[in-house]
Every structure is written in C-alpha cells, then in structure tokens.
Length: 113
Ligand SMILES: [Zn+2]
Image 1 (tube, rainbow, N blue to C red):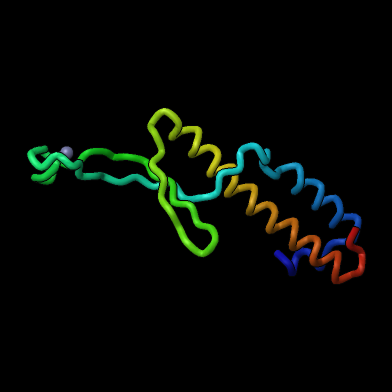
Image 2 (image 1 turned 90 degrees about the vertical axis):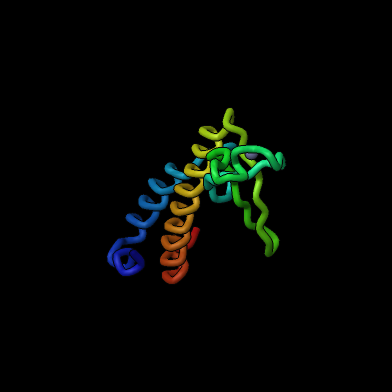
C-alpha cells in the first residue's frame, strides 16, 4: 500500500484519508479481544461430562492488555452483540492503520495537517 501512496498527489491523499476516516467504527462499539468457543467440564463428579460428554460450547473473550491476557465468559444472551463489537473494532483498527500510512506519506512530504 505505501508504494501506491507515493503515486498519489497530496489532494488525493487528503481525499483518501477522508474516505478512510468515514469508515472508522463507532467508538461506542469498541471491544478489543478475541472471541472463541470452548467445551467444559463442570464440578459435579458424577456428571456425564466426566465421561467425555462435555458441556457447551461456551463463548469466551480473551483480552490482551498491560502485558497479560485474561479470559472472560460471554453469556449467550450477549454473545452476538459482543461478536459485532469485536468485529467492528477489528475492522476499525485496520482502517486506522491505513490512515496512519497515509499520514506517514503526508509527513514525509511535509504536508501533514
Ligand atoms: Zn458436567
């Protein structure tokens, strides 16, 4: 992408930046992390899960931050909404990486504003 940016005029770079910025997700939807599903054993030692019939699948969100990760259980009632938030955040952050590349090109030309 950065090689393509070098072919654009400054006006084209500003216009591209504007189009990209319009696609950044609504900040209200920000939820950083990775969703995954897992099967679990319960604490009842006589339960069928002890012979391999595990419970689930359950949804979990792995969150990375401050040099560590933690995993939260995501209740079924909000799993779909959480998935929308995570996906909007992933797409939005990818767009912001592209905007940063445009701004780097503008900076290189001393045209950053
Ligand atoms: Zn069980």
